[in-house]
Image 1 (cartoon, rainbow, N blue to C red):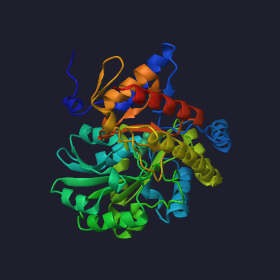
Image 2 (cartoon, rainbow, N blue to C red; image 1 turned 180 degrees about the vertical axis):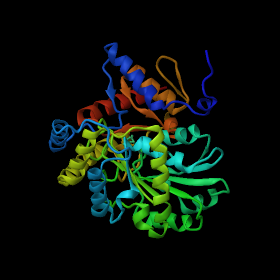
Image 3 (cartoon, rainbow, N blue to C red; image 1 turned 135 degrees about the vertical axis):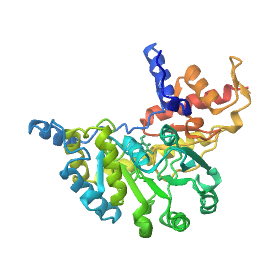
Length: 400
Ligand code: PLP
C-alpha cells in the first residue's frame, strides 16, 4: 500500500465516533439501546427555518455562493452580534463555513505553524486536540478541577504561556462539563491575556443560548475590548436552533485573521450550501423567544439528570451553568469488577460495560482528556434520560 501521512499517527479518531459505531451496531443487532451520548438537540428545526430553505430552493438558490458566505447571511450575523453580544463587525470580518467545526480548524490553520503550541483547558471538546495535532502543532492541556467548576484559573493560564504558545481555546458554556464563565471570570482571564500580545484567543460560543438559572452569557471579545484585535469568536446555528444537519457555522474577528481564514478556505473548501445559508438567515433574524423555552426544557432535563446521578452511590456531578451535558465523577466505581468478571479500571471500561451489558450509550471522559468522568447528554428525551439513569444505577449496584 502507498504510504499514508505520518501526521495521522499523532492523534486518534474521535472516541465519540467509536461509541456511536458500537451503539449503532448493537441497535442493528436488535438490542434496546438508550442513547445518552449524542451531542445534538432532539428538537426539530423550527418550521419557519425550514420554510425559508424551501423558498430558497424554489427561488433557485441551489448553486455555489461566495466561499465565505452570502452577503445576506453575513448581514444577519452582523445583526446577531450587535443584538446578542454588543459587538459590531464589518461584513469583511465575518466568515461563514459548513459548520463551526471546520471553521475552528480553518482558524487554527490560519494561526499555526508546525511546533506552535495551543493552550486547551481540559476537560475539552474532543476535536480541539486532534485539530491542533493535524497541523503538526502541539496541544498543551491545562487541567481544570471539578471544585473550580471546571474553569481555568487565571494563575494557571499565566503559568502556562511559553515562547511557543500561539493560541488559547476557550469553550463556554463547555462541552463536556457545561461550565460557563461569568463576565467577571472572563475579564480575569483577559487581564492575563493582555500581557501576552502574541497570543490569539479562539472563543467557541456554540452553546451561547443554552444557559440556565438566568446565567448571563459572556464572551471575550465583548468583555475585554482591548483584546478584540486578537479574538476570533466562533458560533453557529447547530445547537441553538437544532440545525446540526444544515451545516452552518460562522466566525468574526480581526481583519488580518479573517482574511487569512478566507485564504485557507479559498483553496480548500467550497461555499456552504446556499439553501442552508438562507435557512440560517431565517434562524438568526426570526423569532428568538423559543430559545428561552428550549433552554428551560434543557434545564428541567439537567435537573433530573443531576438528581438521578447524585442519587447513585459512586457518582458525583455538579450543576452545569449551560450546554446540555452533565459530567459525573466516577472514580469511586473504578477498581470494581462486573458480574461477568470484567475489571473496571477506567471511565472507558465503565462506559463500554454500560453500553455492552446494560444498553446505555455515554461518552468516556478520556474523549475529553479527563478521567475518571463520563458525559451524559441531556439533549435526549426525558423518558430516555430516566431509563438511562435507571440502568446506570442498576449497573453501579451490580459492580463488586
Ligand atoms: N464546538 C463545540 C464545543 C461543539 O460541541 C461542537 C459540536 O458538537 C462544535 C463546535 C461544532 O459544531 P458544528 O455543528 O457547527 O460544526
